[in-house]
Amino acid sequence: MMSTTWEWMKHHYLITVFFLSLVSDFWANWYSYAIVHDWIVLQAFLGLALPLINFPSMLFFIEKTKTIDRFKICCVSAIAMMFGSTLMLLMVREGIGVGKDLIP
Image (cartoon, rainbow, N blue to C red):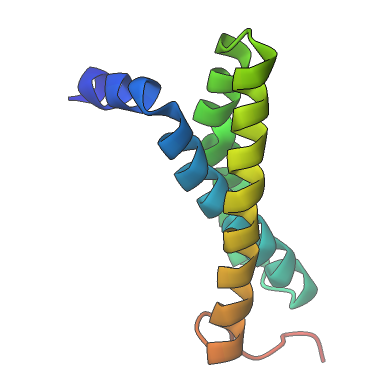
C-alpha cells in the first residue's frame, strides 16, 4: 500500500507538492498563531509535524535536476501557499480553532 501511494505521489508530483504546500503553509500560519496566543501544547504538535509534511516536496525538488522542473515546483508551491494563508485567515475569521488568550 505504501509503495503504491509513493509511486502515485512521484508520478503526480506537482499535485502532491500543491497539496503538501497548501497544508504546510496553513500549518505554519497556525503554528505562528498558536505562539502569539501562548498555546504551548498546540504549538508543540504543530511544530513537530511541519517538517514531516514538507519532506516529500523536498525530495521531489532534490530529485528533479532540470531547472524548469524545479521552477514548476516553486510556482506550484507559491500558489498553494497563497491558498494556505487565506484558509488560515478565513478559519480565524469564522472562529474555528481559536480560543481565549492564555496570557493575562
